[in-house]
Length: 413
Ligand SMILES: Cc1cc2nc3c(=O)[nH]c(=O)nc-3n(C[C@H](O)[C@H](O)[C@H](O)COP(=O)(O)OP(=O)(O)OC[C@H]3O[C@@H](n4cnc5c(N)ncnc54)[C@H](O)[C@@H]3O)c2cc1C
Image (cartoon, rainbow, N blue to C red; front, side):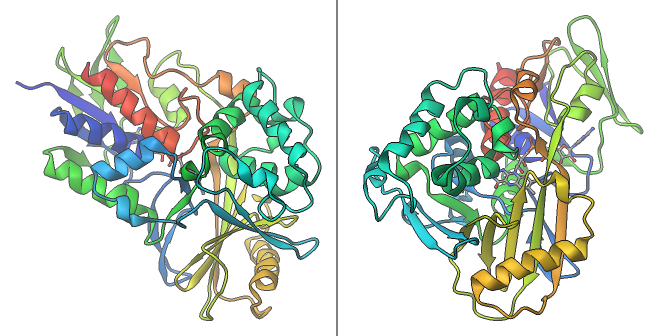
């Protein structure tokens, strides 16, 4: 009988592992505790807004090679939309200034030397700080590696790092920031085009993957939460799902693609990151025509990024732990005050929704970074996947998908 690889967790890491294993001809069973796949990257119908929305605005970059390869395999590349070039629109709420950062398509950062293209109120030599961060990060925090003040920091470095590391940048790992910068800014504008799933995250990352898996004979089970794993000395021997126990044949393998706290419960002695950071998203239903670009960075506001969708404006606030206790209506009012001013819309609060994910990602300081485990475990048929494993990348879709590819390779070997 053919061997089976059991994948636990149908977030994008688990989906990525399952897709790669199925592509390689493995027999796959994907077990998801919830009723829906996608984990932290999913769409749902929101009753307050009366429309489908995502649990949070997600952006990937055109240089996210694993995410794009995954989308290509499942036939969903066209579901991601973005500008033709790496152009980013910003507004400074304190001064009212608006500008467009245009990175161009080339490998060399000519934009730094152009008054018209670099960040207003910065000089070309200010950007040397990026080189320092990229090439000499050490084990330090960003705050130890570079000066976290001044126009370049406030108008470029802070918005990028907050959005990608989901941590107050001064405390975040300089090494992670360096990897991110090397794979994006330093690799040229062609790798930095922001891509958004305009018709929703599930229509890009989830539904096409489930269709691919079904077409390749994989078995996907929802409402199937793994409670316990039995081990002998070197391997996992059975999976306990509460009302069902599945024995593992000698060749069978297990990919555990669950969040770190769940993985630590299932694998005795596993060390994992144990601090998390929140992300708040505030969505507004708008009837009026909005002239904002698909994505606008906001400096000196509570709002960090504004996204436009048909009939909706959505705001993202990363590292939002301080906002978790704030009354939802107050938060909606404050954010709408900023959005209305930026978009030139009436002050009256339109229908809104606040979605706060307390454990949106792991914290990304150097200590938490040191706790991220490799894909291999103490058991030779158990492999880890998840954005929080040691991928060397910030906890993002790219990290999750890359971790799934890696676990699939190990499980198939
Ligand atoms: C609001 C928000 C905004 C974000 N913005 C961005 C962005 O702009 N760009 C970006 O790249 N990333 C972003 N991220 C991060 C991105 O969503 C994550 O990196 C990615 O979704 C993590 O995927 P994962 O598969 O590793 O984990 P999860 O999505 O957490 O998947 C784990 C799955 O395991 C299941 N599970 C748990 N325990 C069990 C069990 N015992 N048995 C079976 N199943 C189980 C869960 O139900 C879940 O489906 C954002 C995240 C949030 C929350």
